[in-house]
Structure formats: structure tokens, C-alpha cells
Length: 191
Ligand SMILES: [Fe+2]
Ligand SMILES: [Fe+2]
Image (tube, rainbow, N blue to C red; front, top):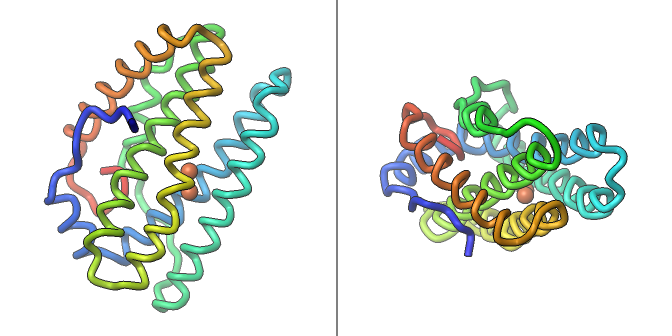
């Protein structure tokens, strides 16, 4: 349903649980980036009114998630900090096609895949993190990240027929699998 081409290995979960604070800092950045990237898409394509309502709603939800993760960090007395990016997003965006509507479709489908991977990994943390407060927080995010995945795919389908979009989604999902495989292990949601 989430169209990912690989399942996260147990090593990732071990690393994430062993570096919970770094994962939470990264997670906070992910939520903030998700909100700002949705707004950036509206800025880049102001002539696409069909994007406005779904992306505004999504940005609002991601900001709420950002607030939630910041509150968890505060509660744990972990200061928010900058972090070196894992390279995941840059590598995903390296294959974005030029020209319209291909570029916009690729941006939407990559956003969908990032949501799918977050969702898959939040589920692992919800099921296995030893801190019940954190497990519950991750569980509370699952449903909206899965919904965001679907929103991005549906938006892409507004620009090309469903079969073409699904074919491209499969190609990008394969690319995402390879990107993750090649990244050095880091305590990140997407690494
Ligand atoms: Fe989120
Ligand atoms: Fe999301």
C-alpha cells in the first residue's frame, strides 16, 4: 500500500533506539522540512490552484507534528540542534525529470515516498521503542503520514494518467531503495 521497495532492517531500529535523542532531533527537522517544502511547492507553482488546499492542510499538520516533537525534546531536556543531513533527500531529488508536468509529478512522488518511509519507520518505533511515551507519540503520527503519502500520489495523478504515475512511482521507489542501501549508517529517520 505504501509502495516501498524495501523493508527496514532490524539494524536501523536498534540504531534508532540506541540514539533516541539524535533520532528525535532529526525527526523534528523532518517535520519542519515537510511543512516548509509543502509551502515551497505552493510558491514554485502558484498557477496550480488544485495544490493549495491539500498542501496548506498538510503544512499545518506537519507544523503540529514539529511542535509535538519539540515538546518531547523539551520534556527530555534535549536541546534542539542542527544536524548534518543524511543525503537522502538530495539523492532522491537528483533524478527529478525536467520539464512540465514531469518535474512536478516527480517532486510529488518523491514527497510521497518520503512520507511512506517515515510511516514505515514510525510504525517500527511505535511497536518496539521501550519508552511508552515515545512509542505512543510515534503511533499518533502514523495515520497522518500514511494519509500524506496518499495525498501526494493523488495530486500527481492530476497531471498524468494513473498508469503513467504508478509506473513512475515504482521507478522512484526502486531509486529510494537503492539510495537507502548506499547511505552510511547514521542515526536518522531516513538513513
Ligand atoms: Fe509529519
Ligand atoms: Fe507527513
